[in-house]
Length: 300
Image 1: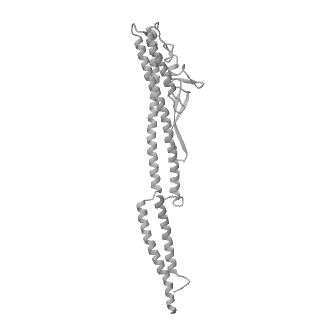
Image 2 (image 1 turned 90 degrees about the horizontal axis):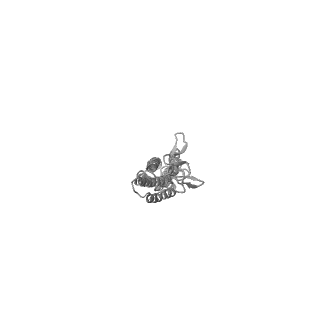
Image 3 (image 1 turned 90 degrees about the vertical axis):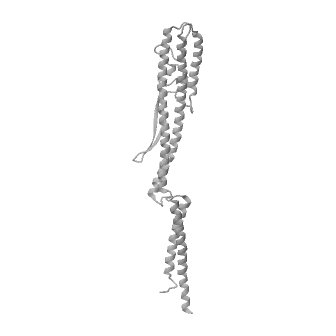
């Protein structure tokens, strides 16, 4: 039936054109943003996962910064402890030299005085961002080592603790100032009754007294070596964790991309096909609209 009020062919062609235009809009949006899932309306499940994982990745970025800060503190403390070990080793050598017959012990003590002052200088200088782990307050120092999302969805920040005690620090603090009578170098030695930092030899110092001083210096070296080893182990762990966090961040970013990124090859092909379909739909609508014009010929 020919009707001038209802053109079903034109209605069908228009509906097809609208559908094609909507698909083209979606495709063009994917091409412009690079995202297949850019909003919750595109795919609620994938959008939710991607949003959560992007948030976790941002947290991992902060963990990387915290690891860098922790690494700097540990490396500073290790550098200070390593330098102090070298100085104490030199003090040990001076004590051995003092045991030689006829040596001027007073001159040797002058050298030891300078070395002892160098120990204090090293301890004071080994500070990063106001924190000194080899000549500071006793307690527990924490270093951020990770960010974890558990299977139940809860999140937590993991830390590694380092115990700061007089037995593994060169000196400790008293009322905010370095106390040179405490710590590995300031504590009184069991054998000599003097500290590595505070002892002094004179012409009257006996071989037995020198031997006792050597025993206490060796004991101090063992404690310092143990502390440096602990710092080195933590530094190694932080380095490994930094590498892991970097790889984990890349893996999360890649995983999110697989969920929400658009395949540009596929989208460009789809766009070409839709453009062709659009042209055909316009042509079909034009033909459908021209059908109603043919009704005029019936009245001529």
